[in-house]
Image 1 (cartoon, rainbow, N blue to C red):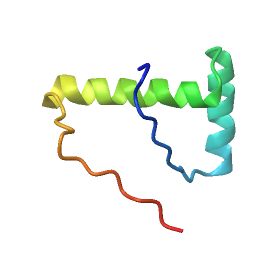
Image 2: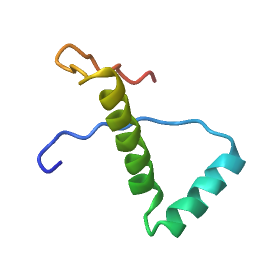
Image 3: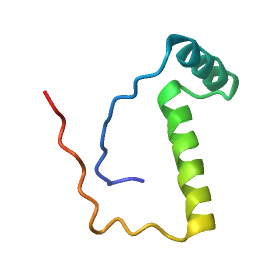
Image 4: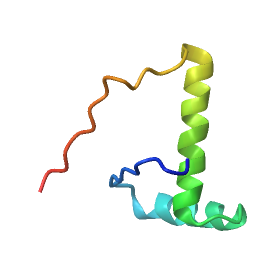
Length: 66
């Protein structure tokens, strides 16, 4: 991942789920950001195994609304 641009986005979740994610992240020895990255990478890898490699060459990242 070194040298790649990083994108940020907000996620709105209910407080109970947020608290549970904090507990799971701590149990895994990760901070919440790294835990979420692990979950997302695992999900994308699964999707690509099942559906095939994702072509991101034409994907446009939406601009943040103010």
